[in-house]
Length: 142
Image (cartoon, rainbow, N blue to C red; front, side, top):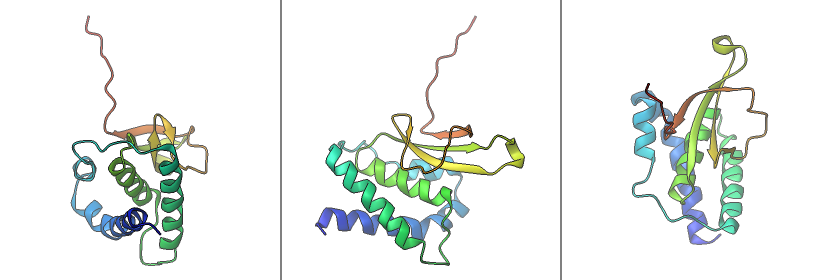
């Protein structure tokens, strides 16, 4: 495995190991700000994105074997967001509620250019409740 890929896998493992305690100690927007690199990284090639996706999915699969490590969509999305941002992708962390509102399960995922990153299910049913970085919308004042 090339050194850059090994570093990325090690970084993903380290993130997943530390995220549960960080989530417990910090408000989500503060945590996401600390996970977002500044200045933005240089974008990677399409070939590198394919390699990144493979590394992320394989590492997540391996981490599922650790029964004491939480493997919820929140932790996966936070780790994916961080890795994607650090490799130059303009990723967005998103959370939403299912069609039954607060009586339904929520979900967290990552989007790149408005498209879900490696989501297996249909997320169109979720109403977005949180987005980071926040999207800027214009407001008309009359």
